[in-house]
Amino acid sequence: MFRVSENAEAATIHPLRIWQTPFTDIENYTQTNREGADPFLVNLGNAELVRALSSLLSICQLAQSEEVSQTAYEALLKTCQTTLDTYDWLNNATAIGLGDVVSLLMATADLIIDEFAKVRQLQQHAEAAMEQQQDKVTELIGSLKLAPRDEANTLLSLLAQLKAEVGNVMALREHRYMAEHQITELQDLLDHHRQDLNKVLLDLLQDEKAYHPYKQDIASIDDQLLTAEKKPPSWRHCNSALIPYVMIWHW
Image 1 (cartoon, helix red, strand yellow):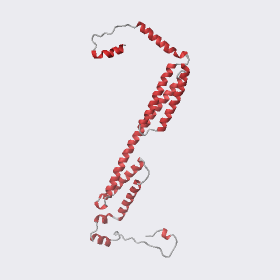
Image 2 (cartoon, rainbow, N blue to C red):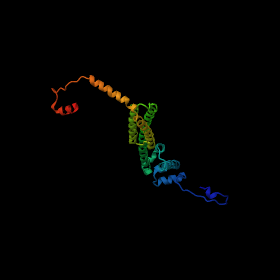
Image 3 (cartoon, rainbow, N blue to C red):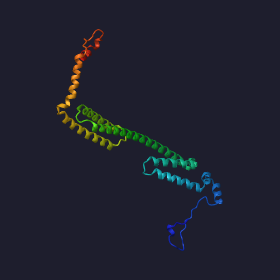
Image 4 (tube, one colour):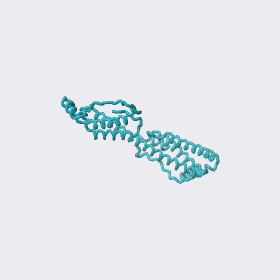
């Protein structure tokens, strides 16, 4: 066998490497087989052995790759399966357990792919929860922009909704694989609108007109109480164990 690196320039003498192999001629094959050589390896053939070793080398390279992705492990699993299907003799006892090693590597790659699927499912769940929360925040901010600035009860109700949404956004951290920066952005947005709404309410509640709706509600309740029918409490069929609670409620 000649090597190009050793024969780069023209020369009279070139180094030659001679490989001795049992796959040389019929006489050598017959003599080796007669001396008790393993018929499995003898009948396998050099070309078949080289192709199998090439596939095993590809498996080693894929297994040692630093890429961590579902695609990489799927490629490794596919190469292992193809190798075992093509060279079924790797499971032979003479193959020193190469088939078992490849099968073990397949099982490990399969488990890792399952974990990737679980992680992706959790990521999709977190993305859906974040998208739903973003829609709620967007809708609430739209209501804030359209709300009248002279109705205290409406603004107070929106303030309560803002505080509730802040709690909902903080609860998103319980999801695995949730994007932390998106949670922070939503919290900052809600805090900004809450501070603005607090300032509006402080200015509004300093005006006497802001309390007119509440005074009207109180007056309406007073009118209803004047016309309400009053009845004395009935103790005839009351359970003695409930009397303290009934007295407290009546008081």
